[in-house]
Amino acid sequence: MEKVLTKDVPADGSALDVRGYEQAGGYQGLRKALKLTPKEVVEVVKQSGLRGRGGAGFPTGMKWSFVPVGKDAPHPKYLCANADEMEPGTFKDRLLMESTPHQLIEGMICAAYAIEADVAYIFLRGEYILSAERLRKALAEAYANHYLGKNILGSGYSLEMHLHLSGGRYMCGEETGLLNALEGKRANPRTKPPFPQVSGLFGKPTIVQNIETLCNVHHIINHGPDWFKGLSKSADSGTKIYGASGKVKHPGLWELPMGTTIREILEEHAGGMKEGLRFRGLLPGGASTDFLVEEHLDVKMDFTEVQKAGSRMGTGTMIVLDDRTCPVGMVKNLEHFFAQESCGWCTPCWSGLSWAEKMLQSIEDGQGQETDLERLAFICKFAAPGNTFCALAPGAVEPLQSALKYFREDFERHIHEKRCPWR
Amino acid sequence: MLSPEERQEIEAEFGHYPDKRALSIDAMKVVQKRRGWVSDEALKDIAELLEMPAGELDSVATFYNLIFRKPVGRHVIMVCDSVSCWIMGYDRLRDHLMSRLGIRMGETTPDGRFTLLPIVCLGTCDHAPALMVDDDLHRDLDPDKIDSILEGYK
Image 1 (cartoon, chains in turn orange, cyan):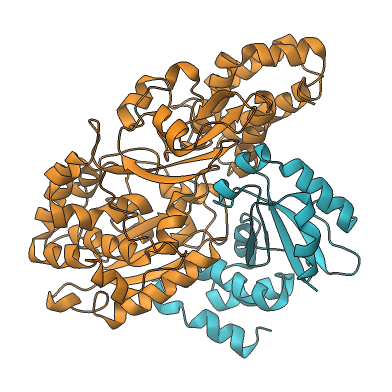
Image 2 (cartoon, each protein chain N blue to C red; image 1 turned 180 degrees about the horizontal axis):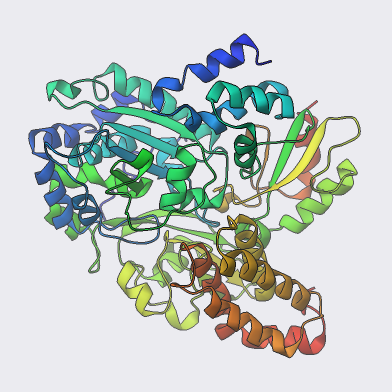
């Protein structure tokens, strides 16, 4: 099975420097890209079927095609790498940045070239100290070797790239919240339209793209769209970095063909549940995805199939619930996170989520009422897509609505026994 | 007053953005790195340098988790309280830290050595539970490991 993104990850936990990266074939995709026209690069990425790895799964090439190009396009144009990995249970982009920072930089230069961007920013979580250190060094190396700056490799194309450290807030990972944060403002979401591709950072055309997505770009240019499609076991192309955390035997990350089943990831790669524990369910791709349970183990982990099963692949890093962990407590923990991280911009989010958290706490404390379950279900509808300004609240209620469905009897036990049966 | 070094470090980034105020968070971090926190006075000085109202800068400061508007101890402990760490034993870790330090979350020890804060998912979920002390990440924790970790921060 072919690995692409993690093929050259050093086993000793170090980062590949520019020479090591070049020896492993690095910057060949960029050389090829610079011989194509920007339009041709967009076309190749479109044909590859690459979809965004940050959670939403939007087709990457299509997103780029909305950016105005040519003589009359407004400048400067921007590319923002979304390295604000803050979705609870998600730790895949950290690996890519810490091990192969040049892979991200090369992917970013190709993406920036495709939309004729002038400036690129890496918007990085403030807590990712090691990523920051290694990206800074890699950026200096990339400038010194003419991969960045004026007239890249003699192509006539110029690009500046800067590292921007976040002040820390989940909302910064939302596309337009990130743009506000980069401008030095509170990370509230912006109204769409206008979409960032037309009017984004500082009012100029902007693309915001996840780290894992960007790391794929030059590989696609180097080996072609058909190769990329062939890596997958399903309708969605490429490989995917999957992960598992919680009480499994071997928590970790694995780059596997897109469409690998949940069962294979859980049983073969994560080694199954720890001794004496039983599997109860999982969040397939971070905190803001619906629970899946035993009956879904043979679902393929890709955008289409997980959605058919009633959830979302999200970031592809699953959080596993075992039978010794209280599902109500787990959902309370999740809603605490979302209520705290809500930016306060719209009512279903700031009001609904803190209300949900309070009710879940009282159920955990043995003071829940039967009617609380109806109220929680109401909040799930209240905060559904269409009622809120951005995707935070709809994502926040995904684990709640599915927990009410799959673990209803556990909620009821808390209410009837007036205590948490796990305590 | 901002020190010449602080001013220099902030101004060095001016060229990276078309608007100075894009540096609001960076600038506060520059000050915080040296002074531990951002005082009202520092906030006004930064706002002046970035040519923005101090009130607006404060609204930015209070929005972000990593900017401190109150004094903190010499070392800041940030304990991940998100879902994977919670499953793997966050509660026990937090309780141990609170009893060992004699403070609650959000407080500073009387000797000014440690401030204890919760933090959201640190992105190291395969090594949960985890915490950071200043810039250092500590992973695969259990309460027994805490004492020797704290020893490393005087």
